[in-house]
Image 1 (cartoon, rainbow, N blue to C red):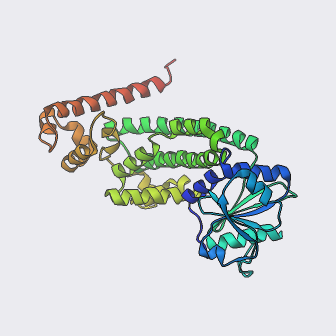
Image 2 (image 1 turned 180 degrees about the horizontal axis):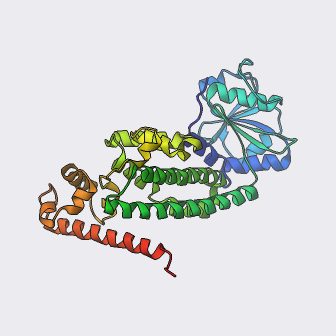
Length: 364
């Protein structure tokens, strides 16, 4: 039995059938012709064992050929990369005990073949004029281009708001970090916003993949709005998690991606995942940053140097208290770089403090 496709497999599948691809051109021709079709994009032994009848072609793929072959009742089998038409008018015999939620013969066969082999299987309904995509346990309905553009633009607007809210929270956290006044609840709130932003970005990835050539502008907006969020989220975990090793923080970062919205929205649960317990009292626990996130903002400061600094001083407040001469004594840091670190942190502190003052309401 095939396993559940992961997010990357889904994106690859959507890109294969996206507007602008040869396969999608053929599918659209079938839709316009209202002939219906059953197409398997896999020619491995598992699929071959299910085939009965039809005829072997082994011909180069052309959208017009796909349309003409779809006029016959049987399935069309393509190579795994979709570049060759392997067989046409084939009868597929999947295991009838494989569960299926579909009612039509064509769609039920498509779902069972996909579940049994993990192959990409496409069913086009002649009556409903809809493209149904199956892969493993995945079932996905390809949607109208105009609708996709509408929801993708709405997702871009949502991502803009999420990024603005995240940036504001990060600025507030930075001020607290410079003053060494951070509590676990502050970090939990920022992590919530990181992963809310990343969730919207992943949703937008699906739209971009499904839109194909029509989604280039959406892709550029997504790249601009989500730039750096993944890295900074990981650095925030390295700053505050009890288990501070790179591997532990990366594992937690991946775990948070798979958490439900309810878990992400619960600050106590976020505190527990960071290693501080799940009680409400844990949210008020004072915690000092190690300094990864803010040090990374200093231009041309390699991560190896940041690691050396944190290994020596342990926390950002200790790094801030160090003199240029003391910074100079850290491995890999000369006087010039020590001065750049000292001045860079001072500039960051001033920038974030000035930003907080500009947001404060004016006195009457």
